[in-house]
Length: 98
Image (cartoon, rainbow, N blue to C red; front, side, top):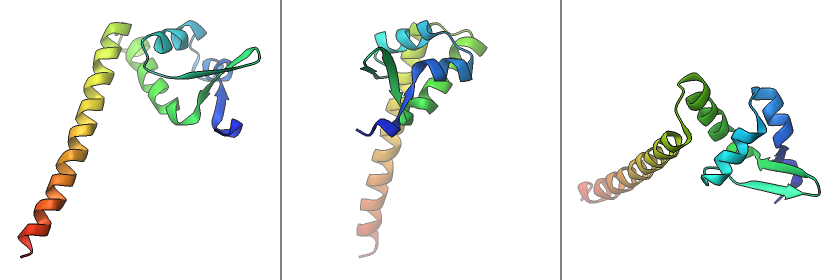
C-alpha cells in the first residue's frame, strides 16, 4: 500500500474537530482500520468518507458506538443487496432478449 494513500489520524482529528479517542473507538468496534508507523497512526484515504459519516452520526445525532456499529452493518447489508439485485437484474435482461 502506498504511503500517499495514508492520512495521519492527528490531521483528520484536527480537520473534523473530533478527538483521537473517537477514531480509536471506531477501530475497537472494527468499523475502520488503522495503520501504525513509527510513532504515528494513519488511516487509508478510502475510509475518510466512512469516518466523516460516523462522526456525524455520533456528534450531530448523538448515536452511541453500539448504534453506529449496528447502522454501519445495516448499511453494508443494504449495499450488498443492491449489488446482488443489480447483478440478478442484468442476468434476467440477458434471458429476456431471447
